Image 1 (tube, rainbow, N blue to C red):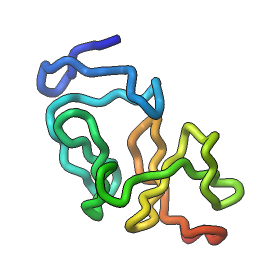
Image 2 (cartoon, helix red, strand yellow):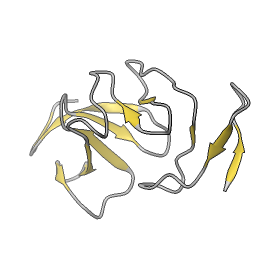
Image 3 (cartoon, rainbow, N blue to C red):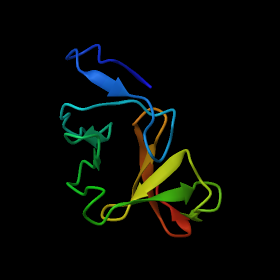
Image 4 (cartoon, rainbow, N blue to C red):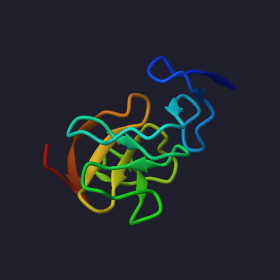
Length: 102
């Protein structure tokens, strides 16, 4: 399923592999301190420079502060420990294993 990007006019895929609700554009969008960036083709890039093809991102259970393969909403950057809400693309804090920082 696709729709037009309101920013650039490119088609936007709404069938992201990890979360079918997350929308991304095929044009590159840099990461900010508040939001995940999108590389060309739709791969995530963190504000720290990590990508899905680098150290990657893993499903994160915020209540238990640990990796959870069944989690679909939150993902943690394996380089800097930022946690991203996959529905909005917004960074919601930094978390280390079994210790929430913010």
